Length: 485
Image (cartoon, rainbow, N blue to C red; front, side):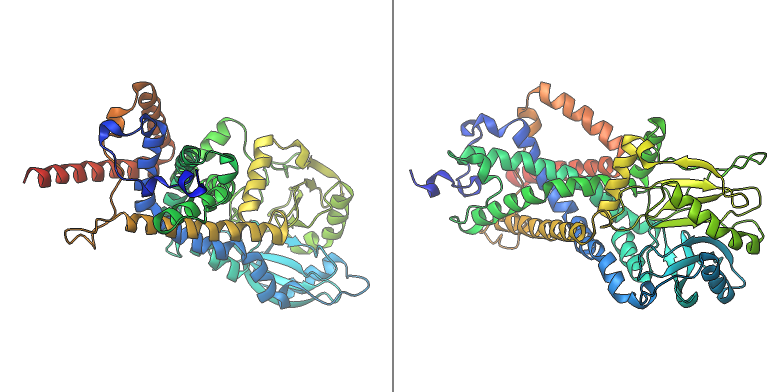
């Protein structure tokens, strides 16, 4: 038997009567096929927009480093000025703003960021003055956003990917895409494994990842759709999971679950002996952080203490690029925490009494709960910051793969359209109806229970799934009406 005969796609086979169709059409495969079809058709546009904007988001750290090179880098010299001198130079350019943090230059060619609270800016935004550490002279200023300190270009790409720059209402699009991506992907996995093992006699496991180039038309499209989807699957599942943590509705449920299971991100306490309790949290797990307007403090004393604080923090394990949070009021410690930047895998933090240089609290990344670590790494990977340019290239490849999978999916749907009786412009046919009636209750009941749980925890899945069912019922009724007329 030839390879072509062995690998003929299901799509090229004639439709069989219901009683003649293989029993393997039922069960997991039939349910996955129908779910994959409806979710792909209706959620596909949202996934496509997410993939396109996600491709730009993936490489945004590199674009930022190129476009903002004058702000981010300087010519290295022999000895940098004291940190207090650098901050003094920045404060002189923003006398009406409150100093809130300092990010010392991490590498020889980096600038120092001096961060101010600016009431005219939006949530999670701060004003940053970039200082040449060797001359203590500012080289420019800009608005920075979130815990990663994104500059305007990367912030705009971030918002385009997250909400199409439409604000809170626009986040529904990205949440719908993230909510369905993992479901569509896993349903596609079930379908592809069934097709490959059903049509490949030899080495079927290898053919899961290799498209069959011997086929033409819809069969060829199907093979590329499935094989590329398999390559992208692990990354798509990770991106879906981490994307949901930033969502509005499912994200709130995830946050509540993490709190109940003690999986939240820990933070150092900035409480000094004899003062009211206060805990410092520099940014949490999300794109932004909570940077509310601080209470008045003596900036001169704080600036003079910065060198001591930074030296103490480095001596106690904070050796990566860090941000020093300046206390908003007397009686609180400086919080020094490693920044979320490319190539930094740990987030060690200490709290230091600026007056004495004594460490009042220490939080090593090794002491974080395992799930908090995994969440942090996952989010950094999603942002393209976990392991530098390779991370960004992987994300870009995954987005390009998702784009081609979606386009090929719609192409297959178009090729399933009826071509006789003037139906050339009609949409493609859906998989056969009656799947649930033909499926064993031992499979249907757990699946319905799982659908209810997922629909409650990820609300946009529940609402859109209900919409799919309504559309399916209406299509079925319309078909019966046409058959009876």
